Length: 195
Image (cartoon, rainbow, N blue to C red; front, side):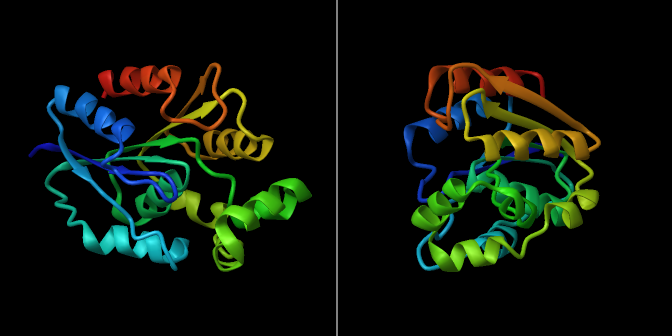
């Protein structure tokens, strides 16, 4: 039995980018096998991303499987963890894009969501209920978020921490929504060192 981590990048990002390679090196230093899991972002929606992740990558249940995702990658991790049952997941800046988030978000946030995600993606996201799925997430969940994220992201991170039974919340100082920043990388490295 070995330890395997699946790294899931943020929306329109890829694991060949330096920040994801650096995260992979943190895991390798702790003896993990690293699986870089790129997602086909274009012309797809969240339900497609999760299906791609859960079917394209083979999960050997004999291993201790771990997920780490940033932003949309954290949403994919959360949704997949309800089905695949990893040992732990690290949710970096979990996006506030669930059905419950859109029901209470500011008009400005919804406008940003439509601008960057487009109508088809937002309509798909509005069907995904955090409250229906979180009882199926049994793994340890470490939630990181910047101290200056949009209020919808902060609300989502705090709500996830409150509802997920085996969760820990870490606030990254001097950070909006940027995994590349030194403070964010330091926080991730610290979390990985304790796995």
